[in-house]
Structures are given as C-alpha cells and as structure tokens.
Image 1 (cartoon, rainbow, N blue to C red):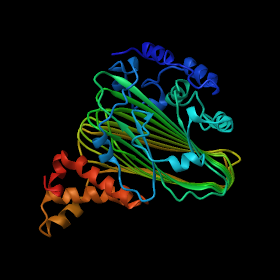
Image 2: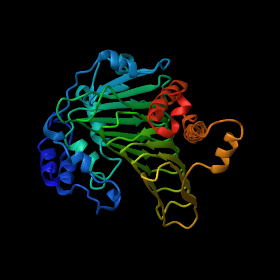
Image 3: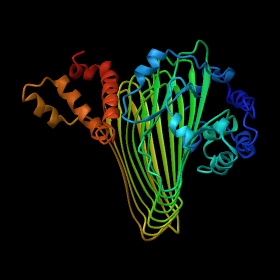
Length: 439
C-alpha cells in the first residue's frame, strides 16, 4: 500500500514541461497545496482510494503497445465518422482516421498546435473547473504531456461525428495513463462527440486519469455520448467539465460499467442566459466493483434550464454512489432545473449511496430533485410467471427493461448496438440474469 503522501510526491515528480508554451503553474501550485482526499472529505465520503493506493501505478507510464486486431474489434461502424484512437492515453495514428479534419484545423494535438491554437489552448485549458476542487483534473493538467484540441469554427455544422476511442491494454507491471481533450465550439457551431472507453484484455495494472473539457460559446450546440465499458479491474478517474455560454445547448447520453475504482466527476457551469443542459445516463456495478458518479450543476445566470436523469443498477457485493447537486446562484432568476435518480438494488450484499442536492439562492425558480432505491416489482414478476415465463427469465427481462429505457435514448443506432452487446456480457455472470441470454 502506498501512503497518500508518497503517492502525491510521486505525482509531483511526473512534471516534465513538454509543452513549454502552456502555463501550468496555477495547476501545479494548486495540486502541491492540496491533500489527497480521504473518507473525511465530503465529496469522497463513500469512495475510498484504496484501490488506487494498493499498487505503485505512478512508477512508470503505461506502454502504448496494442493488439491491432483486438483494437479494431472494439470499434463500431459509424457512417462518415472521424475516428480518433488513444492507446493508454497516447494518440495512435495507425488506428485513427481524422486527417481531413486535422488539415482543416478542427482537430489538433497540443504538440502540433500553431501559435493561434496555442493561444486558444492557453486561454481555455483548466478554466471550466476550480483546480482546488478537482484534484485529479488538476493533476492531469499539471503533468500534461500532450492533449487534443477540437476547435469547431463559428457557424459551422460538423456533419462528421467525432468518435474518440480510449483503449486500455494489459500491463506487465503497474502503470498509469493520462488523456486530455479540450473542445471549443465557437458561436453557432454544431457538432456530435462520441467517447468510448474500452479495454483490450485485463486492466489489473492500469490507472487511467482522463479529462474532457468543453467550452460552448453563444448558440453553440453539442450532442455528447459517453460509453464506459472497460475491464472491471481498471482504476479510472474521469473528469468532464463544461462551460455553457448564452443560448448554448448541451445534450449527453451515457452508460458506465463499474470497475475496481471508477469515479466520474461532471461539472457544468451556466455562464450565460438561456443555456440548456440535458443529461441522461445509466451506471451498473456487479461483483466487488465500485462506481462513483458526482454531478455538479452551477446555475450562475438567469433563464437557464437543465434536466438530469440517471438510473443505477447494483448487484453482487458492489458499491455505487450517485451525488447530484444543483446550485442556483442568487442572480440566476427564472431558472428551471430538475434532477432524478432511480436505482435498482438486486443484492443484500450490495451498497448504494444516493444524494440529490438543491442549493437555491434565487427566489423565482422551478426546481425539483429526487431519488429512489428499489427491488424488482413482485407484481410484475407474478404477471410474467402467470404467463409461463420462469422467474429467472422474468427477473432478467425486468432488469433489461429498466436499463434499456436510457440505452434507447442514445442517438446512434451503432452505439446502441455496442451497448446492447456489452450489456449481454455484463449480465453473463450475474446469476439471476443468465437465463435471458441462454447462458
């Protein structure tokens, strides 16, 4: 077991300054002044970092070698998509196909940025979150080796979906990977982003620290799909930080499978009037997995709207956390914000902690929040059994129906099919659900 102080010192030793034009002092100073969160930290109350500290992940960067056949087997056939593949956090051009948009200046690795792009990156990187509040995002920036800039020009509608695949590969000894995305959409731009986090083989020796940062300028629109279907032995901390300007529109659909330790931090700041955010998601955990979802919506401007709906499926001896916070600032009049979390708990050994929060300082708003935790409905089970369906199959069908309500909202049919296939694999070794798949 690595002590928190030793882990932090190892992290500080990772600074390399490979991008000398990028100002990183603020992030590095903030990380150096921060403490690694413990169970006494409110935001980490239900998520110990034991899995992260059990191995010396920071001893070396992860190898970027991959089995090309396995990697290509993870992709889905998205028509006209621009595919960008990272292997253990490093861009792999042999598996990617984005030359057209790179030539247009829409997609650029940080290390290849021209002076104007360098200025854009310097202006926006790390500005969508406070470094003191998001330690792992701050670590990501402080130790940045490279990243990817997605820059949508004003009034341009990108017809090509941007399909980003983050692959983890087996490591002989503990190692870590980092990846960083900065998306800036100028006024009136529209685009579609699909992120798939996946694995080729056992991830018992890998820690992946990822950050996606999104800046939507006035009247920009983004449709965002996030699929996290990695190997369950992985340690993965994922930050998504979004800043919405006036009249911008952000829509997210996601699914996340649990792992040895998975933490999803989603931070949305409404920085202009009439901005809208729609988030739909489902998270699943089994065995001894742990998944933690922390959502924070900062309604700082008036006339903004948000709808957040997440479902959780927890079984085995796993643990899941959902913390959804809506913060209405005093000047954010006429805000309408709703948050709901519904959960299905199938095992007496499993644990689920859900905490919806409303913090309101304005007096003319429409807001609601709620959470529920339940088991399979006995009346529905009886209905299926009365029509000749055995109990195990009935349970499986009800579970699938619970999850599918969110899966069917994913805009891409190809991604829907990918998720359906992975759900079949997920349910494969959940005893109560085997019969649905004929296993």
